[in-house]
Image 1 (cartoon, rainbow, N blue to C red):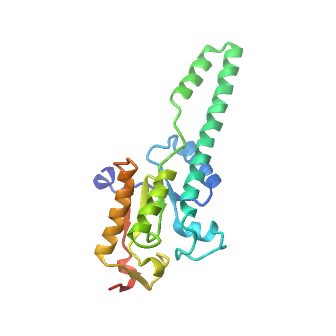
Image 2: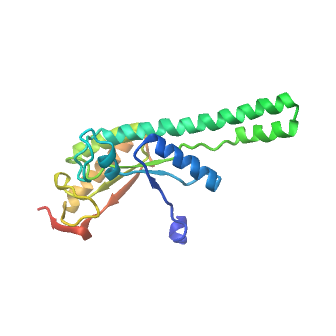
Amino acid sequence: AEFDKDKTKYTQSLGCWHGFVGQQKLISIKKHFGSTDKKYLYLSGWMVAALRSEFGPLPDQSMHEKTTVASLVKELYTFLRQADARELGMLFRELDAAREAGDSAKEAEVQNAIDNHETHVVPIIADIDAGFGNAEATYLMAKQMIEAGACCIQIENQVSDEKQCGHQDGKVTVPHADFLSKINAVRLAFLELGVDDGVIVARTDSLGAGLTQK
């Protein structure tokens, strides 16, 4: 809503391919901006293909394992919670030191920081490429992602087994009805897991497509 009113109010996310990378980004963001409000992490499919596949470095063509992205979502949240534990641990040590020194002003200041601690745990957008198969496969994969903690699923309208990197030409897109069935499948996964406000990023590659299936 803020972006619709003022185009300078865009949100910016940073791609990440490892829990430690995501953790360090959020620590840096919090130090720089003083807050993690409206910040999030973007889990890029091409980064997973290039850096996390057990097959080795791969192009962005959905050839990596289906479970890799959900595993990375879990890993990221583990590292983000660790950042919270580290920061709170430092604050509690400061609190103990202030009490031992009898510095009531410092004690109140640190206690306030603890009481109003802002978490490093932020929403994660998980890129599931073209859904890794038909609508049922998309549903199963989305469900796994949401269970891992993803609150936003990004999906594109390419043919799964002809998937090309978004920066390349020669993409093959599916008919609107097929893409809508996959969007509905993701929505169903959210609803079945009790998430009423899950977000879906529906990306079209139509402008870069050389062929539409059927």
